[in-house]
Structures are given as C-alpha cells and as structure tokens.
Image (cartoon, rainbow, N blue to C red; front, side):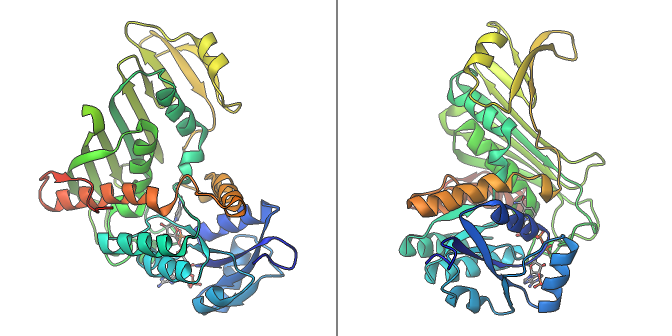
Length: 370
Ligand SMILES: NC(=O)c1ccc[n+]([C@@H]2O[C@H](COP(=O)([O-])OP(=O)(O)OC[C@H]3O[C@@H](n4cnc5c(N)ncnc54)[C@H](OP(=O)(O)O)[C@@H]3O)[C@@H](O)[C@H]2O)c1
C-alpha cells in the first residue's frame, strides 16, 4: 500500500555502513520514501544516522523487526543486517508480503537458499540482491562486448576481488566470525563470482578450489582461488582475498575466440577491433573508447569509464539498483537480480568453499534442484 504521499514506503533493518547508502538511494528516488528504521538499539540507530550524515525526520524507529513487517506504510523491506540473519529475515519479509532489497550473501547454505526461494515464490513479491557492481559501466560494457559478439565465443573468464578488510571495517566484529561472515566468497568475493557469471553469460557446471589463511582475526580462510568449468567448454577463474598488500582491486577479464577484454584494455590477435566502428556501436554514453597501446607497445583499445575500484560503499552504484527495484514493483515485473538469479551465484560460492574444504576435489553444479 503506498504511503500518504503516494510513494512506496521503505523499512530498513540494520542501520550500518551499507544501509547508509541504501537510504541515500531511496531518498533520491521520487517514487519511494523511507518510513521506518529498525535496529537493536534506538540510540545506536540515531548515532548511525549522525555518523553517516543522514537526515530522516519523518521516519519512525523501532527495535522490533515485526513492526516493519506489520506496518501498512512499508512496501519494501531492506535487509542490511549481518550475513547470518539475511535468510530468516528475507523469509519473514516475503511471508508478510513485502518486496525486498536483500544484501549479499543471500543465504549461507543450501537450506537457507531454498528457504528464501520458496518463500519468495509463494509470496510473489519482487526482490533485488545487491550485486550492484552489475550497474558499473565497465561491467556493463564487458557484458555487452560479449553479448554483442565482439569478443566471439568465450573461452576463458576471470574475476578478482582483492580487498584488504581488517578492523577499519564497521562490521569487523561480525564479519570475521564463522557464524556470520562465514567465508571470503560468501562475505565478499561473491561479487566477483557474480560478475564472472553475468559478464561471461555462462553458468558453471563444476568447480575446484583451494583456500589459505594469512590475515589474523578471521575465523575463516582469507584467500581462495576457484577454477570453474563453464557451459560450452569454457574455463573460469576467481580469486577472492583479503590478504594482499595492495589497494582494493576488482578485475574482470573475458577472452573470446575473436578478441579479449582485460579490465580497461581490449586486445586481439588476428582480426583487429576497429575503434571507430566499436565506438559507433557502443550503447553506453558513460563509456568512451580510444585507440591506445598495451604496455608492450602493441595496438589496443582503452576503455574509459568509472571503474569498480573502491571498497567504499559510497562509490557503489546502489542508486541504479534501488531505482530498478522501485520501477519493477510499480510495473509488477521481475528485477534483473532477483533472489532466483542470485541463488546461482551463491551456489557457486558454496560449491567452491566445499571443494576447498575437501582439498580441491571438484564439486558439480547446480547444488539445488529447481
Ligand atoms: N553490496 C555491497 O557492496 C555491500 C557492501 C557492504 C556491506 N554489504 C552487506 O551489508 C550487510 C551489512 O553490512 P555493513 O557493512 O553495513 O555492516 P554494519 O555497518 O555492521 O551494519 C550492520 C547493522 O546491522 C545491525 N545488526 C542487527 N543485528 C545484528 C547482530 N546480531 N550483530 C551485529 N549487528 C547487527 C547493526 O545495527 P544495530 O547494532 O543498531 O542493531 C549494524 O549497524 C552485510 O550483509 C554485508 O555483506 C554489502
């Protein structure tokens, strides 16, 4: 039911670092309005609003999640609590008939994933999962290069998520635990797995992984490398780590039988890509292409756009995610990152963690029958 202002009402649970950016995005959407905030302690909720410089004089505050679920002026529930709480909260929100913004990871095991899937199916509500890097221009362009055939048939895809997360992080107390953070892929690297799936356009049929532990304070391994067999005989690789002494790095590479995209560089072997033709076909106004050379002086094309190069949530493209959900709720249609689609990303993460626990033994996908 829309609020008295005619806008969709939004209730947010877990008022921390990530929620701050969901709030900013909803405040900028003219068809939505944040009506409720929920945290375990009202004073902490207020302190969080001050910390993130948010002004929400009209939103009500509660310590009871049930209040969000019962409120007639909440159409959309945003779940930005620690990871181990997501599944039960999403299932409850769907049961109450609320549309959902669900932070990654959606579920921490198959049981949780199935529970979310079934609850959302039963309720018929709209969901969007925060794999918001799909709205980053580099990833959109990479996907388009593949889908439009400019790279040819994909033979290899690689994604890397290297982010040095220690006690500077607001969620350090819970993320480092096995109960809540659970694994590097589930807590963080799922973004890279999702980017690989989405950009390469091929599902994984089998994975094999190794993990190791360097960074102190974590209850789980802090680096994992994942090899993937992808549909059509292609190979995939994901590196997910918090151990490396370097700035935040998110990298995507797609190698087809015609050309290759390596982050911001397009390269080829036999048939050059034409920068003029490609620029004319490029559908993204925020992506520019220029003739360039690689570090070896060989001709290449440089991609100029906002890069996925910051761990700071204020740089993440949450606005496009929130705008898509609001539009889909109003139009009564599915989003592009529903819990059903995100489940496939989560299954790869679970399979890779299982393989690493088994010393690299391959694990077949999917884990969950439809
Ligand atoms: N998509 C992305 O790019 C992205 C980026 C960052 C984080 N995230 C995700 O967003 C979620 C929240 O992360 P965050 O960085 O915002 O963490 P955070 O700053 O710690 O915020 C989480 C909030 O949840 C509340 N909470 C409720 N139950 C809790 C419990 N049992 N233990 C601890 N806190 C509890 C806390 O508020 P009260 O103490 O007031 O209850 C806390 O402020 C995580 O699932 C994370 O994976 C996603």
